[in-house]
Image 1 (spheres, rainbow, N blue to C red):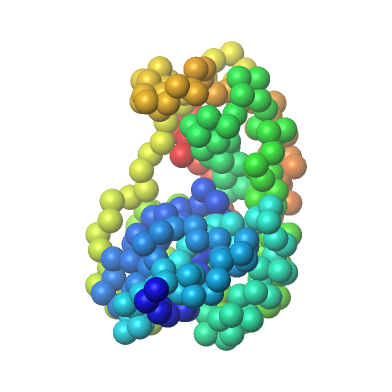
Image 2: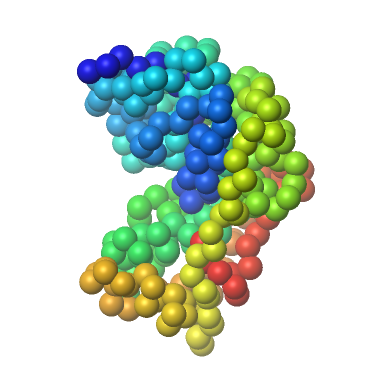
Length: 265
């Protein structure tokens, strides 16, 4: 096996927070090499030999930035944040930067529920509040982020809001400065794709027939539309209110909430 290098950039989350778009955006820069495969999970599962992990970064030795994206590093059922951080420090020393993309935690939970529904993991009568898969845990940002903020210096960690990836803000310019890259060399990627069209029926949100037909094409597991009841969204909003407030310590004007009357993402 050909020897590769080690990354000096990790995109650690959040799940359903625009990490795939960021991975592709950064990988389009001439001075950046991102792993061909996303979500390597090396530091969360920690079962793969280091040589195999390094093989994901072959022919990248001349790149200024070498990176990978694993949202599971911020929350994983396989390891605690402290374990993941310890493994990263042991392997990558002080030569690594941490990039975190955040979105409104309620939006993130709903998006995760939709993701698991599209994968056929959500039963007909499943509730977003009880299906597991880390839907609630991954939205509890304070517990997820504090170990990283404690371990990494301010110049080693960068936070960006998912909505800023396509809103025309200067966030991507600031990101390029943090990475010491020429912003003009980045690709002109399309904005994040829009997910399913949302409709209201009685006391719940679901998706339009057109969106349902698109998702179930070739997927026999999808026999009924997903349902997220307004009472469940209200419960999420109440339960995650402290997480929304916590994010104001990172972004003074807070996170940007989506309009669920329009689209799931």
